[in-house]
Image 1 (tube, rainbow, N blue to C red):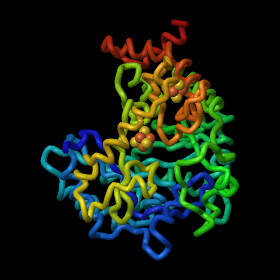
Image 2 (image 1 turned 180 degrees about the vertical axis):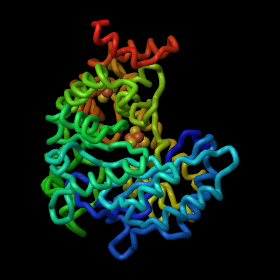
Image 3 (image 1 turned 120 degrees about the horizontal axis):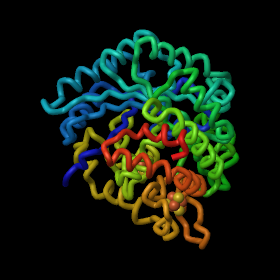
Image 4 (image 1 turned 30 degrees about the vertical axis):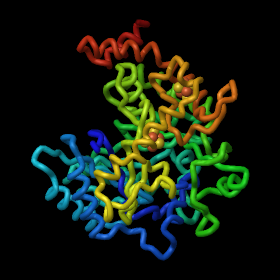
Amino acid sequence: MAVPLNYHLLSKPAGAACNLSCKYCFFLSKENLYGERESPLMDEATLETYIQQLFESSAGPEVQVAWQGGEPILRGLDFFRRSVVLAERCRKPHQRILHTIQTNGTLITDEWAAFFKQHKYLVGLSIDGPRALHDAYRIDRHGGSSFDDVIRGWTCLQRHAVDVNILCTIHAVNVDHPLDVYRFFRDELSARYIQLIPIVERGTADSLALANQGWGGLKGKDRPLYRQEGNLVTDRTVPPAKFGQFLNAIFDEWVRHDVGTVYVTTFDVALGSWLGQHNACIVAPTCGSALVLEHNGDVYSCDHFVEPEHLLGNVRDTPLRALIASEKQRRFGNSKHDTLPKYCRECPVLFACYGECPRNRFVQTPDGEGGLNYLCAGYKVFFSHIDKPMKTMAALLRQGRYADEIMALTATGG
Ligand code: SF4
Ligand code: SF4
């Protein structure tokens, strides 16, 4: 069976282990899958098997060696040095390597930053805005601020000129301050790459009270495995309409001043949609090309579905290529399309949304059909709001011109 050309695999070298206790981070609960006695650290044999199979199964010219967590840096620098050597050894002549890592930034030192620079890592760094907004939920294990440690990590990366993508979650607190968030990144940090990620934490009548306490503060049996189930949401979850207003406010600032100098993933992906492309799984008709590898070699269908029923197998027993191309994974990817409600199929912004991610599809449409995206109201507002400027930018690009010409047109009312 053929492996999709553009598949992407995130790997967790330290499992769900993390030095912070962010309240909304239900990924911390994934430690329950493996029990307290099993080390969450990826061993050398699994690393070697994984890297070998990653390069064997990649058909495209670029292979991403992508790490995330928990906090991947907890695995230690020697592990990452070894991964770079292995990747170089396994690379086929036509393959380029892109190393990426997502980190909370608090443990980054000059030694780490120099390593990232040397090997051209793209670093995703989690910051939720200026101090008060960041510290709303991104707290350390004692419930204290993590802001200064993150900024120290950011500064270190800047000193070494490492490419950094800001990963900002949008939640119940910072959603009311879109321009404070955006201008902090643009003006105070001089960030050029920003990813905005809505927080949606689901729960059932049974699980919600516990979930509202925050995943970081819970331990062991008090922290049940988070599952994509239930149609209730935690207090930290971003309200849909406010989510749309948040995106609109930042878009309006960006489209007047920053096209071509600040890259906001949501806007880039949307421009792709207006050009007839699908540049992210969440806005594509089907998905299933973004898998995740746990520290012990287990592969799951998607990072958001690390649950027993979405386990595909283990790379130590089954070649990665077979897991990616499996019938189970194909069904997972196709279900994004097959479960789309009629309300979405008739939606004027379907081409840009495609019902977003199945993990967020747990509310009813106005006519009572299940499976509508919880964030629908926000996406509708946002995609309708940006339609005209997106059409303009798409037309500019089709004419071989630059999208940033829109800023002059906007200033003159064009
Ligand atoms: S489930 Fe969501 S995040 Fe996962 S691959 Fe599908 S669209 Fe992407
Ligand atoms: S905006 Fe709402 S109705 Fe339209 S495709 Fe997205 S989720 Fe479905």
